[in-house]
Every structure is written in structure tokens, then in C-alpha cells.
Length: 224
Image (tube, rainbow, N blue to C red):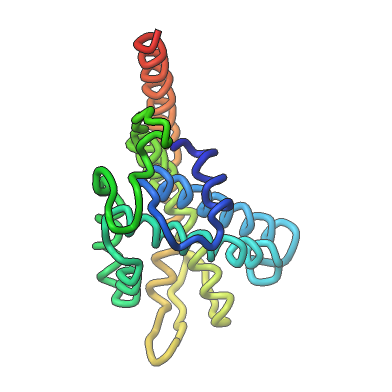
């Protein structure tokens, strides 16, 4: 499943918690959600006083929450696991396990949650589409944009809590008895890593495009 098909599937199955979703669908949707959220944050910063003053980021988050939750449940189903495993996110450490699972290929053939989503239609084409390319693209983009995402999240948290934040000093930011000041400062300073991650991500993206183009041409020649 390619990027466009994954987005279409996400909206088409907006609140569908039954069935299965392959790795490619999950990671392409995740990439789309990250890019859409960044676009909303940028729009709020440009058109309003900040990310907490404008409506775009909130509307994007609200609009993508349910389909994101649904595709996450279907991805677990693809691994023959119940969607209740998503509750691991509340343990914090469980997020690592969920990330590992989402990188694993789903069970081959039919499982208790439905048929294999990578197998062709009922006419029996039996064609399987690899999700490695989609996962690689998602990893490249997330790697390149992680420092910027860190800055946006840190700034948003500071704005919500009414804390002062800049690159030169660490300011206290109490929340439920915990001082988040140092963590928010690190998230802000991490923006400078984009000097390295963005160019490296651009190079990796160029390589990805070349490899993808060559692979498609090779498959096309094999079919003919």
C-alpha cells in the first residue's frame, strides 16, 4: 500500500476498528498525521500569535484522532493481537514495545481478525505489496523533522502551562509537583540538531526516490 492509498484507507475506515492494517498503511498514516500536525502548527504560528492561539493544530488533532486510533487497532489485529494492547501507552515504557510490534510483518494468511490485507482481492490475484518502502520513507521524514517536532511540542507545553522558555536559560516550569523546566529547555535546544538531520534526511530521501524508481522499473520489466 502506497502513501496515497494509506491516507484514503484511513479516512475510508474512519471509525472502523475491525479488520487488519498492514505495516505500510500504519506508517504512511503516521507520516501523514505528523506532516498534517506540523502544517497546523505552522499555520497557527504564522496566522496567529502562537500554536495555542490558533484553531488549525487543534482541528487537525481532533480530525485525525479517531482514524489514527482505528488504524492502530487494526495494525495490532494484523499481528493477531487485540486492540486492548494499545493501553500499553499509559505505561510509557510500553510505547517502545508497541513501536517494535508496528515494525513487524503481520501474520500471513487469515487470522482471527480477518484476511491478510496484503493479499490480492477475492479473484485470487495473490499479489503482495511490500511495506518496507513506506516504512523507510516514514523513518526518513521523522528523522529529519524530529528536532522541529521537539521544538513545537516543547513550545506548546510551555505555552499551555504558562512557563517562560528560551534557548539561553532554564526556567522553572512546575506541573503536578514536577519541574519540567530542564526537559523543555532540552526540547528547545534540540532544534539545532535540525542543521544535521534535515540535510541528512534530504540525502536519504533522494536515495529512497532513486531506489524506489529503479525497483518499480524492474518490476514493470518483469511483468512484461
